[in-house]
Image: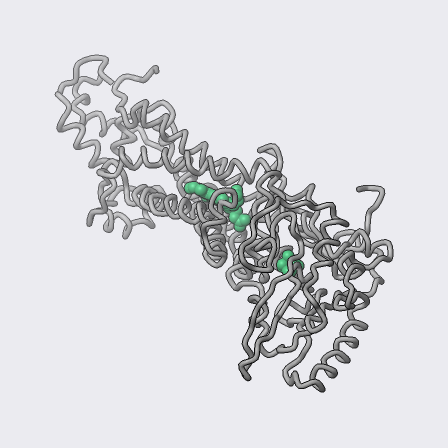
Length: 303
Length: 218
Ligand code: HEM
Ligand code: SF4
């Protein structure tokens, strides 16, 4: 990788020093998924497999359009279909493209114990460096969206890269290129937010009063955003979290516990050192030896 | 094993082997665990052949530790029951700390401090096992809910830090009270050591010993 260094990290997992970050002028990027324009053709899902050379195992038909049923190490994006009855009693077919949200404050990266296994570039993309991954599964527990999957064969974690390899050379992600309806757009985060504003206005004019942009503040915003017809209840879209945030258990574990624990252990060691310098060792004295032997009935024999 | 005349057997060969297997497992668990706990310690994973190896081997060492500590519990639990004497001993702990054990209630085979370490580990190690199983990605990630895994991860590190603190106390006590380490390596202590630190235990031995003792008996 030495020949292709990116030198534009803004975050690097399990690192106490500043990672190479000299090229940090890039604009933040975002992928905008307009759920209202998606027809569920799965061209994006196929394009993802094709560009990333992923071939999952062929499974079974499970009575649902979701295929496969869940994300897996070789399925980095997945169309999830929901039949939802709205308040008027009409059926709405909600189709959401699931995958990594590329959080501004990534829980996976926060949880990761392996230096450099997860990085975030200046453009906001969260990427896994499989070489450094140790397969512990902490990222799975850190992610508020339940995205990363550990491959049982090589014990490495996998997820959507937002096509960091394509974006690095000025191309849009493969799913964006493949989408026939323009439901997936890619550009700078500010452009995408502005474009989403137009789409939301349009949806509102068509009667979707609660239409809105999904760019959840709980994770600092995301670099994959949705335009939702019903932004007031994201969870109807196959369990999209209403207000995602890194679990307080993960926050406590990575935030408070580590420095307090290390300080505590250091204090214990220092206390031991000071005690040995001040009080010194507890050594058996000659009179202890004599009294001990007398008790055992040996005293009289002693010369 | 060469032992001086009059030496008292404190730990049998089986006990000592059992103890050092436990100690080796614990040290390996601390080194591998800390490498995943904080980036400053990640270099320790090199001792185990890298991060992947460390992650894979740590839980297995944990299983050996649990089995090994169970052996120690089976051998020691009877002598570790808490008594009112232990509470009285603890009240005089300031005297113990400055090496002045005269006037401190006499201790049996184990003093209150040793009993504390024994029971703390007897609670912490099974708790580490339970939380460790929940975060064992390879075998159990598919059968436990994510929120349980998150809680278990926090608990496992908390318990580990507590266990390491108890372990520091344990190791320091072994160095501080001279003669203790030899009890666990060569198995014996001198009558003077027993008189000074575990007088009630010595009295028990004395009342059982035929006196005068035949020559050469350990
Ligand atoms: C008793 C059986 C034990 C089991 C089954 C167990 C299992 C685990 C597992 C599965 C992990 C996650 C990393 C991995 O997959 O290797 C882990 C992490 C860890 N373990 Fe254990 N373990 C045990 C005992 C211990 C003990 C005795 C200690 C130290 C006193 C310890 C300290 C740690 C630490 C510090 C971590 C890292 C936690 C973090 O990243 O914050 N473990 N253990
Ligand atoms: S969605 Fe999950 S895997 Fe993706 S950046 Fe956020 S925490 Fe990491």
